[in-house]
Length: 293
Image 1 (cartoon, helix red, strand yellow):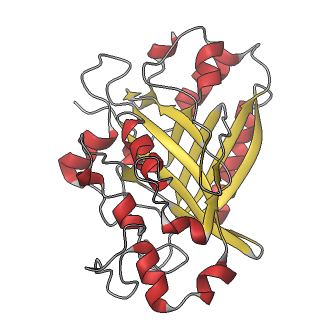
Image 2: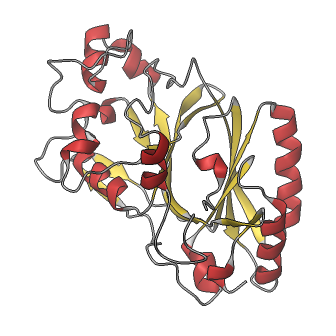
C-alpha cells in the first residue's frame, strides 16, 4: 500500500502558494504538529518538515540534512534552512489566499511565516523564458521509485525528501541573447523542445543529464514560475528518495567535476535553498510517528 502525499506525484496545479515558516516557540510544538497533521491532506497541501523541527523533537530522520551552501566560478548557491514548508496547490488564487491564512493562524505562535510565494503554471509547464520544464521527469512507477522512500519501515515508507530553491531570472540578459544563444544555453530548442545535437558541454541539459551519472541521478521536478512586481523566476522543487541525486546534479552544474559551469547561471541565480522531509500519510493524516507523535 502506498502512503505518499499524493500531491507530490500529481500534475502541476494551475496556481500554488509556497509557504516557508521558522520555528518561533517550542512550547507547544508537539501539539501544533499534531494539529497540522490532522489539517492537511497531502494532496491540496504538501508539507515538508525541516531539520530544526526534527531536532527540537529530540529525534532524527535518516537522510535529512541541511541544504549545503556551495559555490562555483563567480556563483554562490545560498543555504537558507527553514523549519516548515507548505506547497499549497489549487485552481483559484482567492481560495489559496484564505486557505494559507487559515494555516498561518493554525500554526501560530509556534511557527512564524517567513515567506509566501505565489506561483502558477505557465504555457503548459514552461518556465517564464518559454522553455519547457521537467522534460526528462520520470513517469509512472519510475516517478514513484524516484521520489518516494520505500523499504525503511513504518513512519518512513511513503515519505519523501524535497529540495527547494527560488531562482531569480535576469530577463534583460536573457532577452538580449539571440534565439540560438538561448537554445544553446538550455540545450534544447525553445520552439519544439527538441534536444540540440550540437549542444555545448555547458548547456543545462548536458550538466544535468540524469542518466549519465553512476549511479543515475534522477529527481522528480515539480517546479513552478513566480512573479512579484517586475521580477520573476522559478521556484525549483525537486523530490527524491534521498538528496543524493539532487546534490550530484547541483555539483555538476557548478563544475565540480570538470570545471565547466552550467550556462544557466548566465541569466539566473538561486536566492534561497532548503531541504525538507515530507512525511508519509496514514489514515488520511500526516504520519508523524517518526517524530514520536
